[in-house]
Image (cartoon, rainbow, N blue to C red; front, side):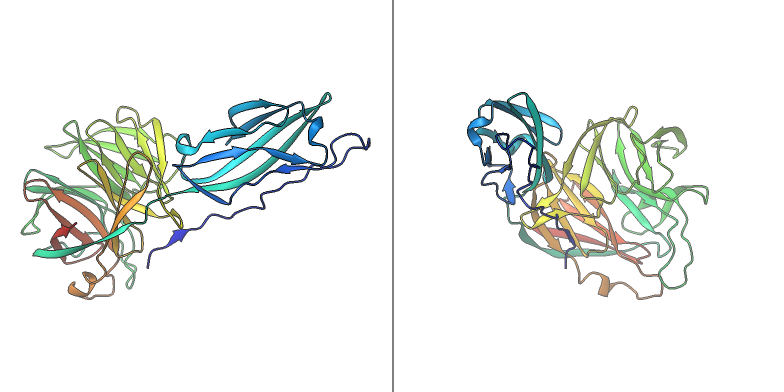
Length: 354
């Protein structure tokens, strides 16, 4: 059901081209590396060669960051908790009798935790604007802040309308709305410091709104040229997705990059991370095209749980433009989640059973 981004594993031995002098190193490769590690493991880096006693020293790098050096061909032990999930580029610079040679390889670092499956119960079903191409959802008191995009309907190709709006969570009534220009495809949104932050899909910028009036106050360029998908916050910083397996931690003042994590399960990293919701120190996320919510750590991206919501779509009124599950809002007062989808005519209040 879930779509995983499996990482290509390259051969763990890269050969060094022989020199003209037979006394020089003829062949060198990494010794006894696994294809996959976890963040809890150490990796022992060492080389083997046809003339290993001629190695004077070795410098080791992971993703172009120097992690240490050894004399001769000693073992360098490195704790992988200092890395991130995903493919790791390993490089050894070998010094031998005045010559310098570079050897490279790759291995993967993936999650050590098998996600558990949570069940859920539907507590209530409420109306939802069937024309709302929902991209972001978050509670503000008893109201919902909803961000909608102008994506095309699956059947009729009718475009939605990008907006930021306040919605009555139980009636679906739109209390206040700010509709955006048709050139803007709005994406995820979150509330921080009494402001609403909203992403754009391909405009490469975020908007800051007055929480009460919904009037735009500021435009912030992204930290790099990328897409905007989902958005949440931890009370201090913003967390943003771009459709990849990464979640970026950004500064709300200027949208500069602070750090990032890579979302992972033991089988691989998880792509298409979409709408986000911060709940009690964890991130709950939609994954584009999947009828499920994943729960992962904002520290290292380890997925700890999955909630299968595939039966919800069957409870929504069918129509040509009915689209995917998207939108998670946690109600702190009740401990329940409000979930919906793009062009869904219903909002579901659910209780997740852990």
